[in-house]
Image: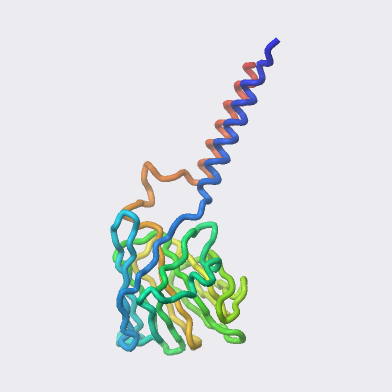
Length: 249
């Protein structure tokens, strides 16, 4: 006599396999594309860069250091010739469950403690941009990046001056570093954001990366990947069909 439950078992296993694949695919790390800082004038407090996406579209990135009255500030220096090796030397600091690529080998360097505001303007609305940071603070010296926008820490680790896997700490919109290096992600869609560095420390560096733009991938579209909750509901539906088949058998 044939076992009529075989078909039901195969369907249930198939449903679970499909559900697991969909849930795991939503957690894959994705490539981010970083700023190629093409020019910088530290004495005038300005720098300009370009991010190139896989479809060959580009997003401009403009950085400025200014005082509260709007007059030009300054910053320490810049690597604009693809010659900063620190990102690749400590690549694990910048890789995570969300990010699969390390920064382009450029960066800008700050000192802080000069009552300046550091501003970034992106040439397009960007979804959840990231900021790679190296050597924020020093052993015994906590240095703060006080941002005007919410963020989360994605990854961190050691660097050429020490560091540790917990040397970056978040407190609200305040990032506190004690020789901290890693990546943070801003939550939302941005064209502009800024931060201050109340405590001076020589020096700490940064750059920016993006995955896509709001224009290329709108927040709400018919083709969006389902959220995990939607996937879970779909999985329950598949399992419900399997149970129904079991009763019929």
